[in-house]
Image 1 (cartoon, one colour):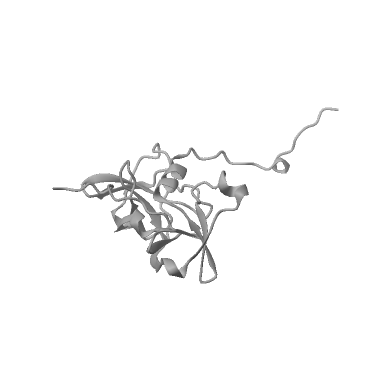
Image 2: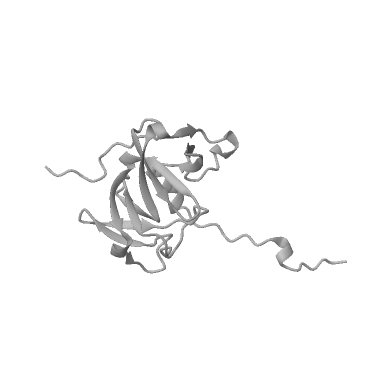
Amino acid sequence: MSTSVHEFPAVGLGEAKRCVVLGLEGCALILAQTEVLALESVLDVQRVPRAARNLTGMLQFAGQDCPVYSLNADLNSAPVLPPRHRICVVLNHPRGPFALSCCEVRMVERTALQLHPLPRAFATRSGPLRALVVMDGRLLLGSTGAALLAHIAQPQQAEVIPLDAHVRKVRP
């Protein structure tokens, strides 16, 4: 009897026994270990046409295509694999697995973490963030696979250009 790779129940950070820290350039995400299906090398990532929304590439995982996404320090999608990203973390999702590239991956015990809820002002505009986590005096951004995929699937925001960057003519 074969089991689909995405039938494992998601566990929140508060209920997890172990968590996984995903090092990005300039920040770190933390998820429950049950969110992670596998680790793959970025060398296995196949490039895709630029037309694909927010997609960095594709991996073959468990006999199926697995989309790979990359995030920068601002948690915005990077269309090209960042040079320091060496590992793809394959994450569990009901619609099928997806991968997130990162610089490093580290497993930690839940007891080593201090979880804090997001401030109310950020709760509705948090993007993929679900909690703030402190570990060894370092701030980590708590998330889930579902929250990350929902964030990544959003169309990229238009670039904001400061008004003072352009000369504006005012009529007398």
